[in-house]
Image (cartoon, rainbow, N blue to C red; front, side):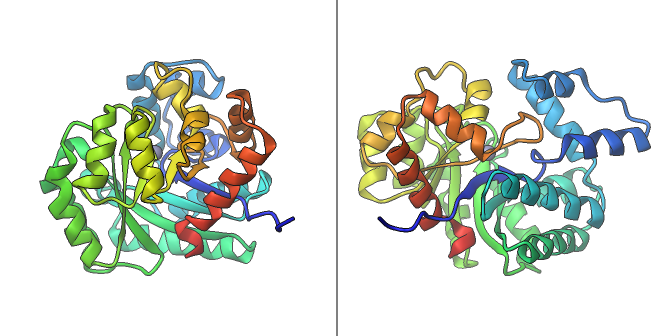
Length: 308
Ligand SMILES: [Zn+2]
C-alpha cells in the first residue's frame, strides 16, 4: 500500500479566501456595511453570479496593505491546515489591486505574499502563487499584467492564468501565454466554467495552456485529450454548485473515468464557505468512492505547482 499523498488545495483565490471574521472586523473598522450578497453567501444561500462578484469585490477592497495581504495568505494556510492539507496553489490578481483599484503598491503586495508564505512555511505548508489576468479584458490587458509583474517577479510566482468571463478565444491569448512562458511561468486557464467546452479544447490546442481550472463544460473528446496530454484539471464542487449550477450532474466522475488528472480546490472559500473536507464530501455525493478520492489526492500532489 503506497503512502498517502499530501493533500493540496489545488485552486484557491487570495481575494476570495479571506476569513469571514477578518472581513467583518475590517469592514467595521472602516465603517463599511457588509453587502447582503456576502452575508447570504456565508449562510449558504444561492445567489446570482452578479451577487458573487459584488461579494468578491467587497472583500478584495479590504486588501490594501502588506499586513492585509499577509493575513489573507494566513487565512488560506489556516483553512488548508484545518482540513488536513499540506499546501496550496494560490491564484491572485495584482493588476486588479495595484493597477485598477490602485489601493496598494506592487512592492507591498509582493512583500505581503512573501510574509504570508513564510508564516505558512513555518507551519510546514507549501504555497505557490499564480497571477491571474481577466479573459474578457483581452490580450492587451494580459500584456499589461505581464508588464506590471515583469520588473520584480518573486520566485514564489509559479504561473500565469486567465479567469473571468471566457469571452475572448484562447488563440488570441496565445502571444500573451508565450511571453509569460518565456518569463519562466507555467500557464493555466479558467475554461469550461462559464464558457463552452470548445474553449477548453482551444485553451490547450491553441493557447498551449498546461493546466485547466474547472473544465466542466467540455465533452468526452476534450476530456480524452486532457487525459492523453496529462493536463491537470482543478475541480471546485462548492464553487461549481453556485457559479455553474446548470452543469448537472457534475461531470467529475466522468472526467476521472476518462483518465483526466482531476484534483480538488476550494476556489473562493471566504465567499462561498467550503474547505478541502467539504469538497471531498461533495465529490462523494457525486458517487465517487474512497479510491477515486485517493487518486485525486495523488494527482493533486503530483501536479501541484507548490510542490514542484
Ligand atoms: Zn478560480
